[in-house]
Image (cartoon, rainbow, N blue to C red; front, side, top):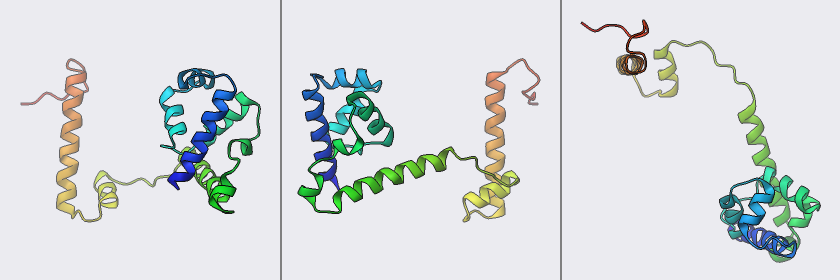
Length: 153
């Protein structure tokens, strides 16, 4: 798959230069992204994200497929399908991460046991105590004169 990223990145570089954007910085500014994002894309170090593809299509007034010509001819009939599937997968992941998550109410000990099944009750209790002590120390540092910090004897 790395060759696919390099082919797409090289093609985007060609489009950039033909459109008069001499440097990666010029294109990044026009797209409203960091120059590293464009550089990684052009070098084939990263996949083109759905957001970046949308920005490129808008800026260059081209359909998304215009950024992938020749891919099928160089890598076989399924290369374009593989790239589009990767983009779909990224979009699904983004939607999943943005969706609200319902988490059942658990005690701190139960939550730790759910996250780390290898912990026994004693270990989970010790970890909860340490976490609570750390939070208390942070509150004391952040609010030394407020009622949030308990006075130690």
